[in-house]
Length: 580
Picture 1 (tube, rainbow, N blue to C red):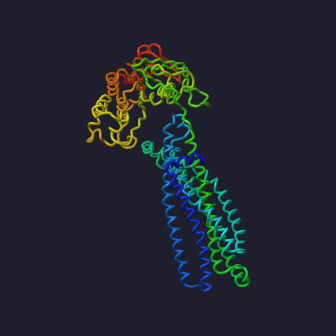
Picture 2 (cartoon, helix red, strand yellow):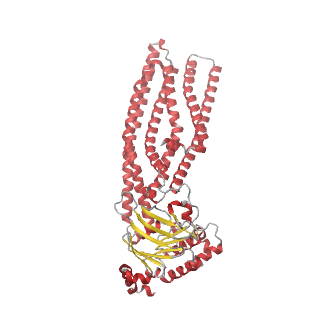
Picture 3 (cartoon, one colour):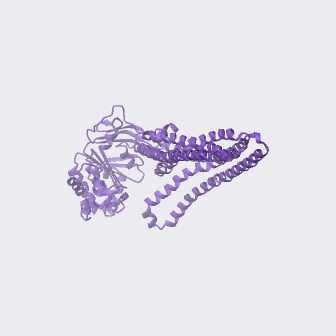
């Protein structure tokens, strides 16, 4: 885990190393200042000449300024190194997520990935900063301060034989008790983010059913669970303060009482006022160093869980891979399903698709209908290799989809979903996802064919109209037509419309399909629909039922041979939809 995250330091190695150097310099100077100060106090007590006092004082000022400079430089380089490290961690995690396939995404929820990219990275950044700064400084200060305390104080240093083990044991016990509570928090952060994301996405539904109070209560419960865990952990960590104060005051009392007695009663002990002053300072340095180490221990405990969650993403291998010598060109839009079966998980008991045999010639228009849960969407998701088939084979353009370079295959397939997504930006920006180099004339042409120009022309800024995040400022039908235009701009070998005209009327639907025939006649068009009118003029209609192909043929053939198709047709015809 440490090795994996250390790769994220990269171009920030220099500020990281400089931080370590500056911290060592600062610590060493701070250790020697009490030693020099103690000698100065003793010299003053012995009536040394003023010139010597002034010289020592100037030297102490120089050392203090030098220590301050080292500390300031360490702060600057440390902030640069830690912020850069966090940037690289976020970049690596996000880049890794971009390589994931649906199977990988299914393993990590979207809210969990958001938490890992935000809260977890922030914790790891804090930990990195503590390691290169305080985690180096505290041990150096601790070791050197103990050594100097024994050199300066002699028998007085016996106080640390009592205080240091007591404080160390107490701090370790505090951190050990707090660890489980901190670890449980991060899993609950995922639940909290999930509640926020779900609420924002479904805001219209929440408002429509007046469920604001229910959503607020659900969010409050998630937030309160986090509060309880943090309160429990912080209550335990708060014991650090009284324990630290006890040790500090015990040390001060011991040094002052025992040291004063030794000065008065034992002149041969070598203990003087300067030594007592140094002992008090070194004692404070030792105890503060131990406190810092305990804080680092707690923070590292918190960060260890975050680091583990980040490394889980970085270590995840994409479910789909390019072959060693991939095919880099899709010849045409022909599609062949040969005995294809598929299930989403290896442990799943039931296949989502079973025994699919379907052959589609390039340029054909194919309609797919079926009830909810008949795996219509699952079928078409196999074509651009969003998932791999579990059994059988699937070919596009005469080659098995697993033989293609994945990017080449997906660039040849355009999918328009029922729940389409538009990105924040202008209408033109969204359309150019299909072709980044498209001209204004090309944008207008595909929007005319997709029946989107009729509402775009009503906007004052037309193609420069701003689209809000998720396309929340356009209607469902407008969003679908923009997404269809975006897909057409790609001029794919295969165009898949997954119930993507459900929000437009039948007249507009017919005009869009006519535009397909005129604009992309050689493209294979697969139309998933609930309305018979959307597919009845297709070259081939496939009827799906419970993950299998129940029947296939033309509209006239299916009316005679498929009871499912005939029933749906009669229901819609009696409802008057077919006559609209």
